[in-house]
Length: 272
Image 1 (cartoon, rainbow, N blue to C red):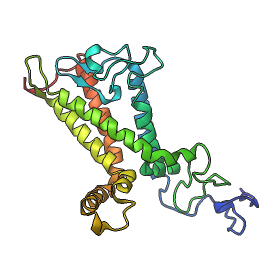
Image 2 (image 1 turned 30 degrees about the vertical axis):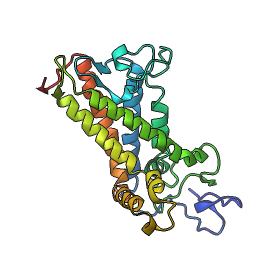
Image 3 (image 1 turned 120 degrees about the vertical axis):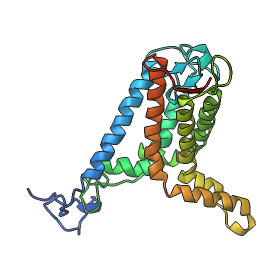
Image 4 (image 1 turned 180 degrees about the vertical axis):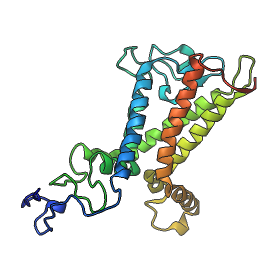
């Protein structure tokens, strides 16, 4: 199979002057494994989250005030009134998630996240698939045209993600209840663990690092902001790990609450 003919306007590996190699790559290792696993991981979350978001059932445990994060805030008129901590504004139709105010912004926050860009650029968009592997695109415009130009709005989605994290925190606090008053169970452990990890993922964001100290010219004149920037920078180095961990904890939290809410299992109670 012959190599593609170089286009005068092409860029990257197809640009004029680059070696015309027939093989897609000369690598002999399993370079395709990482993109494949990334695709499978992202697909698993997208499928699960989509099904649960439109299920519109088994999201609220009345006895213990457990509300799954996939339905928070629950603002549809179809929501169980006790689960609607911030009112009901949206019509109850099957094609509109009960948490339609938060889910689109959380999705945009993750889609525009610097790590997720790397993940799906390499696995889905294949730009590039891996080092020393030719990408299938003859031209490259970067993030200068729609839809990729939307990546520039990441910092604004970050602010909304902080607000939603506050709402999730409030949900976790309200869940310390039982029919007789204060209560504590396995569901509380799962909810609190999930919200803590969501905070770590959100605050380890590159936009948070920029907000706390990115525009400072003299750190010595702003010791408090410098200290905050230093702490954010430390967790920023593990932003990739937190990105994957929180996908897992979101599904685990939702799945546990679904089982309890549907009566499949009973919540393991420690107090109350």
